[in-house]
Image (cartoon, one colour):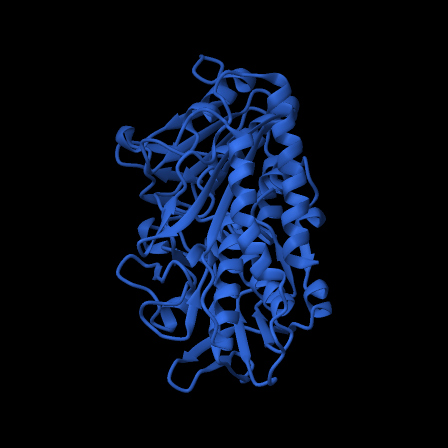
Length: 433
């Protein structure tokens, strides 16, 4: 990927790719029988977008969305809730908009999938028959990779806050209750994981709060990797705002080769252990290694990697026919695991299913992803890319996308924040309204 940010080319390619996709998405197909049934498991960015666009494309399809919660909390922008720059209500979305599109929303937990009978069963004992099933379960955690860390600890004392919701508020409250001079530990996960820039934006957001409220405090990032997404942009921003690399830095980053990978946690002593050292924290935020959501394992949709292999042009599982997997749980590399990628995959998947149910040709897909991060108010960065389907694989479109320039330009950085907040409004409106 070029280090030169070329937004004009990016938008040009997105626009070109978007013409075909949009035409496919908004053209109502001939309304036939009402016997076509699509069930969607998961009400996040992937599932919600697929449900809405499926109904927009073909109102003869009966779409049922099964979601475990009555509201959805976006992972993106949740770091601003942790710092206090944004309120929890601003990342909370109901499914009332989807109901207006004719989507049947069921608040329940899918517990099993019978791929032979094409039936989904739920915790409340209900059954849902389908012609095509979309599974968009998001992520689950590999708790076994860190001794002493589990779901109970995460829900009560040391949150991961990597699935937004109550733990986001818990981490916010812990940060704001911490004494001045305290230490925050962030344990960053190994790849692949949801939202690659997320842990480093979180450090910046926390540092911004501490700088202005508890300036004697420190943030220690213990990393399972030796490099991370947008490395130069983040470390440059930390240096500019938080003294990174100096004796007075608010942020210290310890990579894996220096013992940064966390192997164990001692809850009683509020400490974590790496390969070489033990570290004590006043607030500890462990983001564990990740895998596909539980129902993907229950249904046998995962391979040895813990993620779900799919056909890139339809997102149909390569293990079970008539079941499609989108979002973080799918193997869609080189696309990252992000909210925007899930939104894009959902549209490709919806268009493919509408075509398959109608006996039409599957459209040629295009995909897009952008991730915005706010290092401080008025200082934002981004990474973007456009993708296409070629020779049976998802590949990057040469010359598309890019990064914010490393050289600091205050006007550009301020615009990146505005772009990021506008993008947030647009994509949440796109999925839930």
